Image: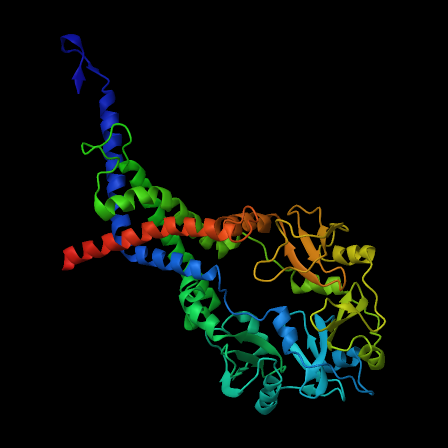
Length: 500
């Protein structure tokens, strides 16, 4: 304490506050250092794995059945006389209210309707006699697999309830599955639904190998854990959340130890040497990459449900389909003349109006069976049912990919209609103009997510052509990996000294 002249009353001691704040700051930095040091020993290796697996995922994604692969696996559609129509199939399936979609295809050598409910369930109905097919015999599934274009020495690998590649919940309405190896050079394996007889997934030996180095460690995609979606989501959120704390603390510590002017006595901007110096200085650059990837990855799990669903719910889809539906007009003879490589006929409902489209080979769907393309005005009226009270949306026609409608591994269908609503969330709905099928929903929160996840996680702020994008990503990944690798070495050395 400082006294005034003549020993009078004490003068204010400004330095006391400064010293207290400095001491408090040192204690905070000390706790940050301890937390970063010991958590970093655990997470540095995890960071390195995430960067390496992310590099793999640039070239090999998680196995899925693309539309072109699905169509290639379909047998040519045979349409004999005397078939029942889609309305009879809908009645036989006992779907209450509008159906999601009805697909007419083959099951072995008989045509069947696969009736999809709005909740995702699918029921198979024989198009010859209206019989509901509860399950498909394994011998028939094997015969279906033998007709696949890649089939060589086909082998039945048995039933699969859930395995590493079929663990996602989207397969639940189709389980149990049958796994069949095609015996081709690519090591292709098919997953066929024992409920519907459809090929629902294919994998190759290359995909399976690289995914053990890519998506599986990157997403913590261990089958027992991923089979419990709520638990898996919590684990990923907590692990990535702690990882963010490690990265932030490292960045704060790195800035606190950086001296540009004046420098340390050694003339360097860092007090460290060797790997520690690389970790310190590299972390100030690579730490940005680290934070960018980890924060965007954490956001991809939709913490606190910040981001809205990307599809309308079942009630909204039912309103869109329409409460009352006119009968489907279907003449097998006319349908058989649509094209020589007819694979499937798809029936949907839009605002109570039935729509039928034929899938011929790999060509875009074409009008079929007396149906007409949905009228844009009728589409707008039907879309208004998605959000009662908001009125009909403004319709925009998208002819080329833009920042919100684009494909990654497979091109998005074009042209597409974008229905723009005037609701508080500024909702958009993308619709196939040929079929009226809803392709996705996007409101303001989803558009923010597009930039926070795709933008930050894949540097997708500008659609860079390849290989320019590859070069940028490799540079960014390398910067982050430098931080992770040096942190792993430092952590290993500390453990060895401590427990040696």
